[in-house]
Image (cartoon, rainbow, N blue to C red; front, side, top):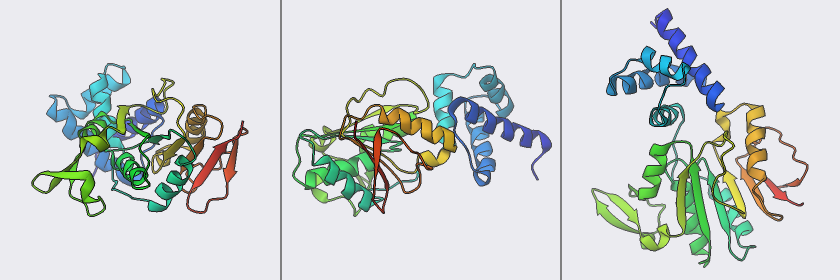
Length: 258
């Protein structure tokens, strides 16, 4: 049984995460998050309450925040998780002479590498894929480019490292870059004029108003003719005035028209 003090601390963490990052944690994940934060606090010589006190007084370091955000979000992903969306994305990318694809909420990098492979499979050689995620731990994993063996990855793109782990060849990694970024901040992403922006399973952590704000911020970076893709219904009824919603059944797709 959860004590009243523990329940209060749990609720306060949820409030802090929402107020600072607009991240929502589902009811069923809150106890596990509370335990995970407690374990992390112990690993750095703190307890849950003292770490929370620092968070409330804005005394937590960027490293501490990065770890807590990592714990608060779900990083489950896999290569070619949604092949239909990747194929649609590639169709759009092919209409640009130098495709630039931005993967938002890229987790540990499986989506950006999947996109790079899909573009390479179509014979494209002059493209860039950039992945961003709020978790520095995820970005570190993605930048390393070492993963457990997966049948979804064609063997010509990877070499075996050890113990069933594979590493992408440098020539493929040269097409893909990563950076840590919080989409709720006003800080520039650092990847300009993306031809296509894609975000899947990231907006689900935010309320409707926050989702719309995130999408509006992302759309500002699109050139005329650029595309913004989200998972089905993840846009929460967003109705931009300068983007056209396209009739795509497998995703929510918007195209900048002006």
